[in-house]
Amino acid sequence: MVLDSDYPELVIPKVSFFDYVTKYARENGDDVALIESTSGKTLTFNQVCDYSVKFASVLNKKGLKKQEVVAICCSNCVEYPIIILGAAANNAISTTCNPHYTYYEMLKQFEHSQPKFVITDASQLEKVQQIAKKITSIQEIFTIDKSDEVASVMSIIQKDDGRAFPFECEINPTEDVVILMYSSGTTGIPKGVMHTHYSMVSLFIILRGLGKGPPSKISYGVLPFFHSFGVLRIFSLLKGTKHVFDKRFHMETFLKAVEKYK
Image (cartoon, rainbow, N blue to C red; front, side, top):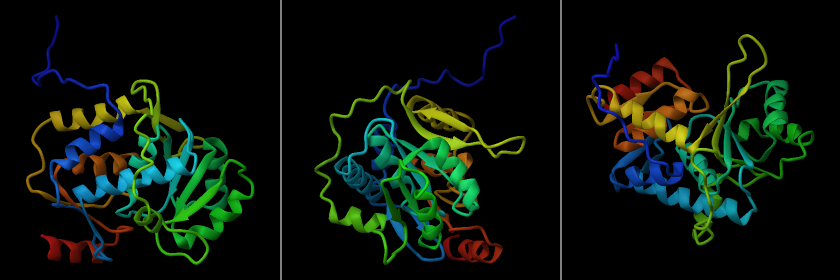
């Protein structure tokens, strides 16, 4: 006996991750997309898309090639989806990393993933610089917040005109990896899990095809963006939900955010 789902069959397009995400984010224009609760930093849906174009241009100018790796090793921040999308537009791979990893935990992931660029918190910069001495693939380090030693992501984005965006970049959605996330390491060393452009688009379409959408247009997130669930959530909410978050979850800041943003 053949059992059919009560849900309609989903059509999953074979498109690049960058094109898919920015297309539905643009539909929300200048509405606020992301709010970092503690600092008050915000980005609109259009800004997420515009800054992603500029960061893709920056990475292209710096010589990021097909399927090379950009390591994102920072706390939750409004720049997080911009970094992933900027790398994706160049058909490069983002690997997400817990910024509070020990030296040896982070070294292990970088030895395996061989990143060309690393984006981290200023507070973790010294550790990352020490690791970069051992990982010869690392060519440059950026920070999220201001640093006296290296450039911040937003500072280089704001200086770029976006003209070097890789318009001619060829992407095979079903074969090219866009995100390399790592397992928890519960039963052994963490293992790299490869998600293609098609894989990530599929996940978002499946999530939106099941049940009803969020009851309101505002959401608070407690998940770290470096986690697979956190990555999935932040991009799925770019469909039109205002997403409030903090760098790290604390009960007091969470309650204040609920009171302020409802």
